[in-house]
Each structure stands twice: as C-alpha cells, then as structure tokens.
Length: 115
Image 1 (cartoon, one colour):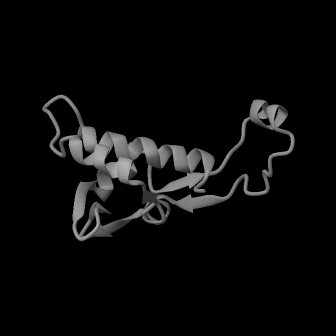
Image 2 (cartoon, rainbow, N blue to C red):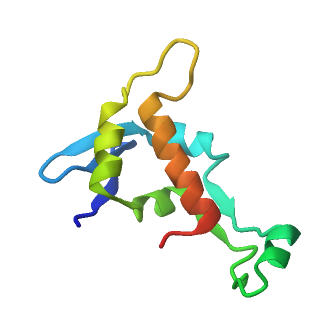
C-alpha cells in the first residue's frame, strides 16, 4: 500500500497524492492548534500503572512539532478523506475542516508516537 508524505513549503502544509499534492493549512495555524511549536512527551500515572511494560524513557523529551508533522505519512484512505473536506474556514471557526482532520492525526501521533 502506498504511503503519502507530508511537506511544508512556503509556510503551507501539503500532503502528497501521487503526482500532485493536497493543500492542508498554513503551518502556523496547525502549530497553534496543537499548543505551540514544541511538544513535551509525558505519561500520566494512570498510563504507567495500566501499562507497566511501556517504555517511558522518552518522557520529558521535547520534540519540534513542525519536524514531527513532516515525518508523517498517510494512507490512501486518509488522503481521500482529507481531500473531501474543504480547505476554507467558515467565519466562526479558526480551523478548516481539512486542517481539523490533519490536526487530529498530528495530535494522535504526538501523544502516541509515530509507528
């Protein structure tokens, strides 16, 4: 199964779609949506108790959000779904539906790591 890369060019995030690329959102908008340019890895006591075998050696490590999102790759299904969402924002929202979906996946990767 092909995987499609994430790239940032001129301050805008794009996801590859084969020969073309799909505009996602401005990088600054996505970085702001996840809380800023740096993400510190943490584990709650409940997570540690529930999963005592979990390696938590990376706890306290701070990662660069822009670097992290550029390591993300995406399945056909994710890219097709992302493309179906509008890139434009409405008057009462800061994030477009497309940016919101991308931010959701980025947060999942920041919280759980990239496989």
